[in-house]
Length: 639
Image (cartoon, rainbow, N blue to C red; front, side, top):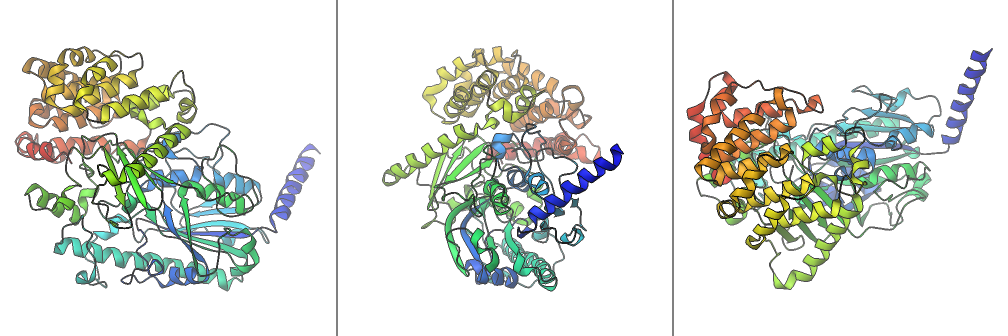
């Protein structure tokens, strides 16, 4: 009897949920990878994108839509959660963090409201998700399997335009390389033109994937009941777009269509065939889809709904972020008001490019790097590789769409600079950006909790102090050296980390001046502090200090003893030191490349670093002579 009663309750709840949702629109998201607004509806005359163009002709496109991060995993993390990955701790590529128990991902809310939710098929989030997040998530997932009369939310993602497809050969060429516009920052070579032409072809293939999805919707008689979104996940897969948080890496196409029946839910500025100037971010998508479904977005979501009954007024700024890109650590934050973009580089001692192994598989990257190494690139083309990179960057997107003329020192633009600098700092404080902790400590300090909760506990994350230390360390002011040395005695290990990093960034003179303080830091309780201090002394210290520093790096390098996160930091430091660390290369070549890590998604990073330091380690040789030959070039350009 109890079982029958329970079953009746479940059926009743299910029926009521579906009845309540029956008067709600269907929602279809068509998404694609690694392409910006190079589409006909955005005015690109070279593009062939008839399906999305037709959708825009009857719907509306957003002229200023941004991903929150210029690479897929953190971008999807922002979408699925409604909060910035720098706030959840899910910014670093292919990391995996937990959210507080009370924070649900948007499909959970939709399913509770009676929606049938499917994802076809990519997940790739940097936050952990429940197993029952979707009704179905696979390459076969479709809205067609829902119950009769049940509203659906469906995602169909095309991988046709992914970075990997730009470099896949052979390729049946449609776009003529001679017809493409090569951006000012790229060298104009046959390889670059071929990559850009192939990129256009792949965007056409992604557009072609959207066509059948729209056709099957119409064939089922559901077009009048379904709100449709089309967007890309970040800028193009070409280097200096993907992975870089400038407008070229963050701006995406976003087209929305609200059928007449549901235009009451559309953005207030919605007009069929129109364009919106509203600034729209990926972090806005979760609250927007909830609002469209009639669900009030939870207050903890950091995005702003731009459609539905709970839509908010347009926001004045968009924010971007770059953290660790695969095996390479960086920390960049950006903001735009739609006209100007400001970037703040907290790791100016590494280039925009770095040596991300996956990025170097693209012919453009390799040709571009070789030309730079040979001294045959222009000023604009050299910016991608040069170190140190500017601490602050300011570009006028109206007059400089390629973002190569830095206005940060322009007297006429100081008011704009200060406005965007202030907006960015206020944003970092508002979202409690947790990624100013070294990744090692982000995981260690949040053990038993979550990074998001850690960020809101001043006792364990004194944000203002740590941000202040990061700003001081990265401003490259030579007069800050004594203060940076004082930071090495701070009670908080993250402040000490930034103190050591600030001395490293300033090079030989700063290290010589504070050798004693850095040597004391070799005994710090924090491995992150010890590794940075060791890199500074190994690169710029006297012979005795260098020997002790190399011993420290050698001790931290093996992942089986120290874990993958510590090993990654130590190996990156050894690589940066170059030939001065050549004595460590034989041991690195023979190193076991695996060890404990926060998640299996880290597994490829240590082997990549080992192969960069000792290239012959890939094939089992010790490779010391090759490493010696190549290290000076890597050290000089610090990609």
